Amino acid sequence: MDETGHETREGRRRTVLLAGAIVYNRQHFPCRVRNISAGGLQVQIDVPLAPGTPVHAELPRFGRFPAVVAWNEGRMMGVVFPEGAAATLKRFGDAAVRLGLIDDPTELPADDGVATLHGSR
Image (cartoon, rainbow, N blue to C red; front, side, top):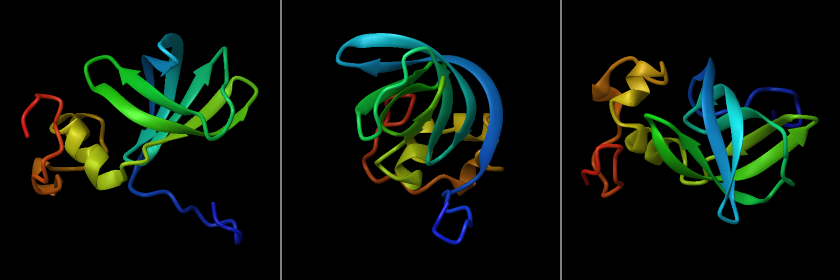
């Protein structure tokens, strides 16, 4: 949110319940993904990390994404994808449709050399 209380999120946010992991310093911390957008995730985790901590978010069937801890409150933690929404959607590839982040694969950004889940460039 910005200083006026308006949402500043890039793209759609979808409520989900997915098993995943936050990877920090080669350690895997299991988590439950509670919501997802092209800009980041909200996760439930037993070991919340400090804001600003660089991590990777691992989502089985969807891949591994570089991320940065944005906030934590109790067992809830938000991470953002620093590559930006377009690059993140490109990494998700067709899975972005299955997750409800976009309606149609034609909404995916043009190929800009970012690897997709299928390993293509």
